[in-house]
Image (tube, rainbow, N blue to C red):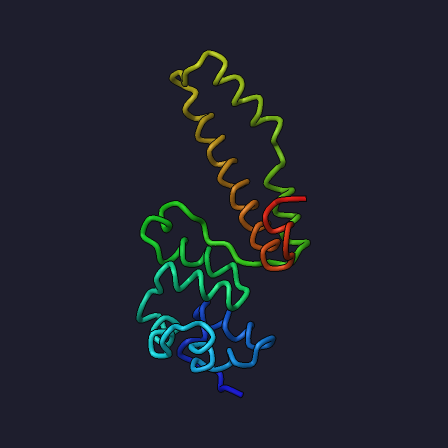
Length: 167
C-alpha cells in the first residue's frame, strides 16, 4: 500500500489515480500506474507534482485508465492555453446536485426564447439590443456549464450506449 503523497495532494491527476487505486491496486503506486499506462514514472511524478503539464494524449490515457473523465475538463480548463479562455472548470458531482444545477440553468428558457426571436426577426442586431444579446450569452454559458456537469456525471457513472447519447 502506498503512502499519501502530501506534495501532490491537490493534484487532480494524483487524486484520480488514488481513487482509481480503490478498484485497481496497481494504481496505488506511480510504478504500477506507469506499467498500466506506459507513461514514465518520473514523468508521472512531474505531472502529479505540477512541475510539468501533461500532453493531451497523456490526459486521454490517464482519464481512460483511471475512469476519470473530469481530468479532460481539468486539462482543457486549467492547462490548455486555448481552453483556459473557453472552457469552464467542472467537477464530477452527485446526481441530485447535477440535476438541480441543470434545472436551475434552464429556468427562464421562455424569456430567452422570446428575446432571441425578437432580436432575430429582422435579421440583424440593432443598437440597444446588444444588452439583450449579453444576457442571452450569459444564459447560454450557464446552460453549457450545467450540460458539461451532466456529461461528466454520465461518463463517470453510466457505461455503454448512454455515454454516446444513444438509446
